[in-house]
Image (tube, rainbow, N blue to C red; front, side, top):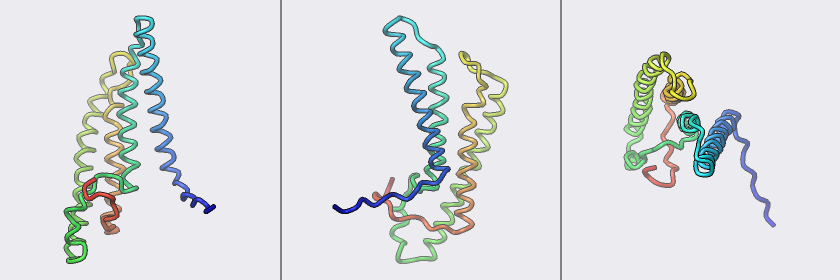
Length: 170
């Protein structure tokens, strides 16, 4: 028998993000399942189940988006750059810097808009559970700040675009 190669240990931030997403998913699944059983079995449900599931889903999505960026798992239009991969290294480097700069710019726009929503949400509460509505746009703000910082580091370090993706448009 040939030994199975072991995977390298995952960083702490990756395990923490996966754990947080797993907890969000588990609580959502239990809340929805209990609500369905109560509605169909007993004719009454838990009103907080929908709000809780919506809040946890939003957080789970943005935690996942933040964790996916350093792993290179976001959408990559490598088909646009592949023709220049071997022909023009100068143009490829320029386009790589432009892509990183556009990611930073997009993160600034998302952070600005989501922060405005956080400020507006501080004065209102959810209907059933009573949490501050600022908790809904907050993960978008945190995600855009985190990805913006990582993209800025990539821009400063002039990190090359990874062409090792399985498909050209992911």
